[in-house]
Every structure is written in C-alpha cells, then in structure tokens.
Length: 236
Image (cartoon, rainbow, N blue to C red; front, top):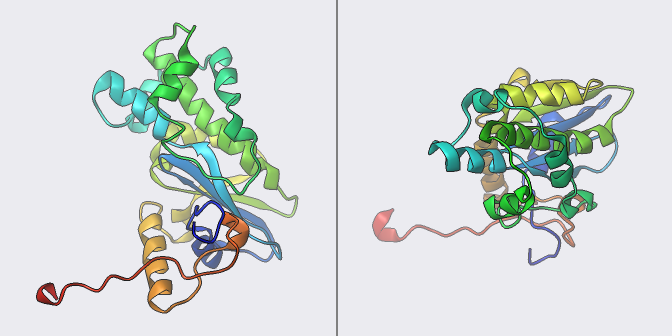
C-alpha cells in the first residue's frame, strides 16, 4: 500500500510460478469470502483482481437463518429458485463495472449491503440463498470469460467455494468454452493453496526477493512484501 495501488491480491505471482502455460490461457480462481482471479496468458502480463463476492454473502445469509456457518454442499440453495429481479438488482453494484486493478471485501459485501438490496422483495430463505449462489457464479463467470482464447482456456478453482458443488456446476454451465477443474487435478491441493502461497511469500521475504506484481496491484515498483519480526530471545 505504501507504494500505491490496491495492496491486493497477493497470490497471482505464486500462481504464475505454478500454473503459467506457453500455449493456453489459464485463470486461477480462489473462492474464499471474496472471489479473486489470477489471469495467466502466454507472453502477456499477469492480471489479478477481486471479481466480487465469493462465499461471503451466501455464508452470512445462511448463518443468519440457521445459526450454522455455511450451506454445506449447497443443500439449502438447491431447494430454492433464482429470482431474476433480485439478481439484476445485485448485478447493478458499481464495483462490478470498475476496471482492474481493484479489490474489495467485507467493507462492501456484507449483510447491511444485502439487506438494502432486498428492500421491496419478499422471497423465501431458500430462493434468496439460491440467488446469492447464482450471483457469485455470474460475477465470476462474466470476468473469467473475458480471457477466453481459442487456443485453449482452463479455469482452475481453489478455496472453500470449490467445495460447493452447486457453485461449481453453475460455473461450468456459464463457461461452456472453458475446461473448469480444480487445482487439485494439477497436483496442488485446493484446500492448501492459500497456505502454500503465504509460505512462498515468507520465503521471498526472508531472501529479500520481490513477491508482488505491480501490474496486478498498481504498485509503483516490485518489492519484497512483509516485515520480519525476530522472536524475543527468552522465547527462542
């Protein structure tokens, strides 16, 4: 952040080292609370940004009405139907129209934001949950499909959202020209991707190697991210 730009996402440089290809476009999609993409294209700069909500709105709505943290396997959402009017209202969010580099989080996509969008609607809990799932899928797919290449295009999914079969089904349906699979299929466990990425960032910092991509975040230059705090001697 001190060098300008967004300060996030942090992991596209790591994804580049793992998954870049010489003959096809690859998009690595992490679906956590927020969904973010790393766009890897042969002989072109890496692009990376937050597409919008990942699990955040679905989880918040589900927890409000059930007390549990998430809709396991999309079971509640499968009982509902997409409300097209609500979906159109959600899709009008200005963040979605912004050009990258961009990032977002709970300061925007939260229950207060959702409650405001729901005014005037009288939907069941299930229909709202299903519409939120579709919203996440559509906001992701609209961005991913920008980078389709007739030479081959692959979407590699990681993060908790990759365990939601309904969400993955919708991504596959909305992106028929893409090979949609998980990073696990490429030998990198999707549940461990983020931990591996931050271990890589730590390694780069310890060795004073650059770990950001200015073209991704909008920073003014490459830099080794983070600060090392030595442990107190009495605890070492």
